[in-house]
Amino acid sequence: ITISFPTIAGETPAVGEPAPGFKLQDQYGEWHDLQDYSGTWLAVYFYPKDQTPGCTPEACNFRDKIFAFKAIGAEVVGSSLDDVDSHKEFSDKYKLPFVILADEGGAVADNYGVLRDYKLIKIAGRQSFLVNPDGVIAKHYEDVDPDTHTQAVLSDLETMMPDS
Image (cartoon, rainbow, N blue to C red; front, side, top):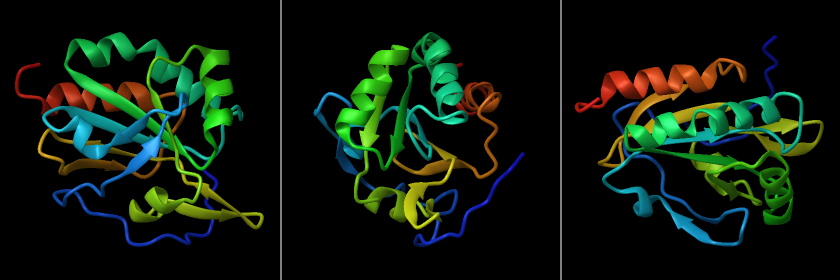
């Protein structure tokens, strides 16, 4: 079942355009900048809310495949509008071994065109982006199935990466 929410975000960057930058704290309060991932393939996945029926399986699927991502030299970063404390609780509960960015104001979700309005609150729509080592968007996933998305991202990375 796909549920769509009204878009309140800016324009989504197209494949082939530079990925919008970010500088946000993760679940442990550490700062992360898009530039930190320069030279590396990066899967950036946006999701609506920590510990919800769709977001939890999606995060756990990335967790369960993290060694496959690391084996090909790719990184995974999740992002929602939840705060650092919420992300820490979520990460600790499900033992998530990757960065989850706290985009509390929604600026990054807005820059990626995924900010949505849900019952008068702002959330990040469930969408993902593959960013190549040069910081350019290589793929945009608009219709994400939390149960199968991770494998699709991994397969696409394996196809796109020259050494895999």
